[in-house]
Image (cartoon, rainbow, N blue to C red):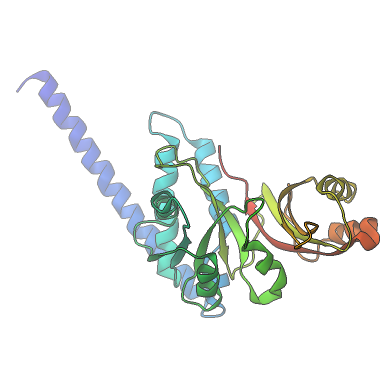
Length: 284
């Protein structure tokens, strides 16, 4: 046997040993996931095992410490599979994907984030996805990002439904997926409330009682301590904007004092401001 062949055999044996150790750790990780579920107890299952803030923090920490030739996207993909598998171990997890167009790319994006083992269904209607999540037929819903000028936008329903409607908890893709057939992005909605990850964007539905520009709303938010910008608006039949969707660079809970300050500054021009979710800022 040549020197090169001998060296290759040794390297391959080392890879086999590493694979065994990795497999042992994966099995141990899954067992710990089962133990975590028992420690949490039955309770309210959605809150118990879907933790969007922690999931984002895990990936950020790993990407920050990563080095070497293995691409960061591969590392993120491996851990997304592990995270989703752990959720399946601890409780129900299924995904309803809304893809009015570009269905292959929306499906691929959702599959990469939620893993190969997670049950998924495809829907042409956002309303069907929202009904599936609120009715318990799906744990998670994936909806396209809101666009200006949509005839029947889905996001106002989250503001009107109070505590009986899903909330936005994530934005996809969290890690760039350059190999997608077409570039797509979406929001993740579920009945689980969002949680802070340390670097977040919150979404506010702002109902106006008179004509108020989006620039003015951004100024008022800034004065209240929130840096915001407009994503979309829903308009009356006469063309006047009645509901604005604003994004702010901060985690904002429903009881956040900055919202009350914003309403005081806006006075009668704003009827209500409703947080409809928040998401961890995606990794570039």
